[in-house]
Structures are given as C-alpha cells and as structure tokens.
Length: 292
Image (cartoon, rainbow, N blue to C red; front, side, top):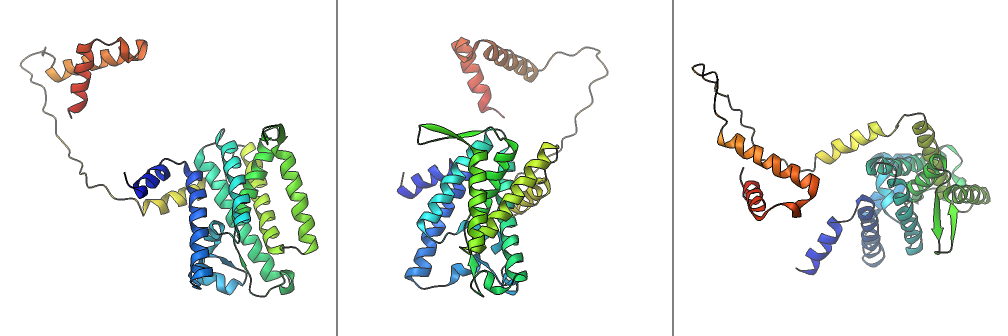
C-alpha cells in the first residue's frame, strides 16, 4: 500500500468531524502556500468579505470562510474545541444534527458579521474592506447548544479536574462581549455572538420538540446527492406465474427448503452464537452466501 493509499484509507475511516478537521488543516496549508509563498489571491474568493457587494459575487463564502484560518494557533484552538464539542454532542444526538448546528452556526456568524459591517459605521471594524475566516462561529454554536441543552455535561481538563460546559460557555461569552466593547477583532467577536445565538435558539427549540435544522439538512442532502455516482443497475420486473389449479397441494420448492434451513441456522446463531454451528452448517451458510 502506497503512502497516498494509506492516508486515504485513514481519512475514509474518520467520522464526519474528523474529516472536517482534516480538511481545515489541509486548506490552511494550501492557503499558506498559495497566498504567502506563491503570492496568488485565489483563496481570497473563499473568505467572507465585509462589503456586501463583494459578498454577492461570492455567496459560497458564507460557508467556505469557516474552513480557513489566519494562523496556526487560530486553527489549533478551533479544531481542538471542535474535536471535544462534536464528541460531547454526538454521544446523545445524530451526527447529522450536530453537523447542522455547526454549519448553521458558521452561517449565522457570517450573517451577523455582514449585517454589522454594512449597517454600523465602517470604522467599527477599523477597515473598510476586511475579510473574515475561521470556524469560531460554528464552534460557538456547538458550545452554546451543549451548555443550554446539557447544562450538567462536563469535560475533564488536563486529566485532573472536571469543568461544566455551561461554565466554559459563560466564560467565553463574557470575554467575547468584553473584547468586542474594547474594539479588539470586533468582526470576529460579532461572528461568535451570531454563533451563540444560533446555538441557544437551536437548543431551546429542541427542548420543545422542534428540530430547526431539518430543512437545512434536507437541502444539504439534496446538494450532496448531486456529487454521488449514479448506479448503473436496472430494476427488472418479473410477472409471477399463477399456481396450477389442477392440484390443491404442492410440494415446497428446493429454494423454499433452502431458505428454511438458512433461517434455522441464523436463529441458532442468534441464540447460541456462530461457534455453536457444526462444520456442515457453517459450510452450508458459506455456500448460500455466495449465491444470488
């Protein structure tokens, strides 16, 4: 197995958030090479611009900006949080639902950034033509969701003591509001707050029995289906022959007898395990599995 095949095998066996973390790391390296070394501005089209007119020309950046980061520590911090938060949420909820919260958090953070940048005076961000990157809004949404829906859930830090996610969420919300008021990276903290709002709303609605991400999930499934290879298999319809009227009784077919024997063996496995089968039964089941 070549190195590429080995890496591909490992990637294929990752869960969805493991793949997202891997993609973030790869895109960070690509960004560094293209932007810093080759001086190419291609990646800029995937980062979220603050000017609404520029955003209209690259609407995909409302999601794609969440897969790029402006430094190794920015990347490391977000991916570590994503790793632990996604596992905490996935223990209780469907992976797709956790993914909905994460992606909707990124979108909400981006919309909050665009709204503030184009409504509040331009000196709010300190730059007239800024851009935003980072998965922080999605991570913020997951953090707030867990804090509200599972307020007693904890994480073990440094393998020494436990901290509730609720307390971590309160700490970061206070810090983000404080730094926003000080004028430090205001665009980024506006996006964080957009993520917090989404996570809070998602959790409170789910408590009431309403999953607000269902429509978004269907849309994403529809988009994903465009890229799935279509099967070449064709469905063949057979018309069954009517049973003969000349005889009121008919002998069971060989196929029916074989199926009965398979069912008996499977029932034996479910009760006593595979090792309880005789060598003859194992051979019969093996041969049957190779037949159509």
